[in-house]
Length: 204
Ligand SMILES: Cc1cc2nc3c(=O)[nH]c(=O)nc-3n(C[C@H](O)[C@H](O)[C@H](O)COP(=O)(O)O)c2cc1C
Image (tube, rainbow, N blue to C red):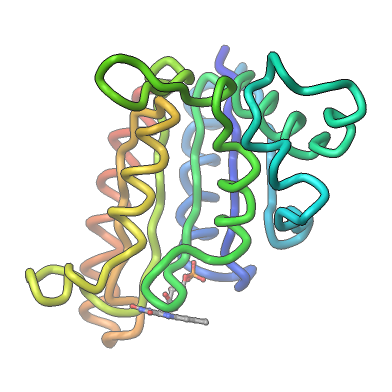
């Protein structure tokens, strides 16, 4: 039995990332009914952005946080507990303005915490999530398959970086070309589904 955390961040409830994440969940459930799923929808239940009340506390080492301060970062504590409790994480991410959506960025700002999800070691940053497996389903309107186009992609490199910093072992399923006509879209849907299929089998 695995505890699977499912994070959705597309503003469009019928978008490709939600569709593909949904297919992954159904596939995993069909193969093994013992898994437990926790659904965290960052659009239906938005995560607050950091404010003057908590921005410095969230950058403080947990050993130095007072009980009063802890109350001000209760959202962060809850989201990190959810992340740590998961054996597997799946994230749906839509590209907005060449980056992740603001809803996903707000979640990342709450869960990326020194001494909680990453720390600094001799060789730099060290993730504290123990190389937890993570599937990230990307959806974007254009294609980023040439060096010129890839240079504008701030979504996949950004997520690869920050999720690795926390110690997540990420596999990407990329649904790109969503707005480039039916043929391109369908070919890319098939590619993304092939990756999702492989990853789903690891949980059967
Ligand atoms: C506000 C907004 C900004 C977008 N910006 C980009 C962009 O910079 N590059 C791109 O390739 N597609 C862009 N798109 C297209 C989406 O990435 C595409 O529709 C994708 O399928 C959205 O994910 P979803 O289907 O999971 O909702 C944008 C769409 C919206 C609504």
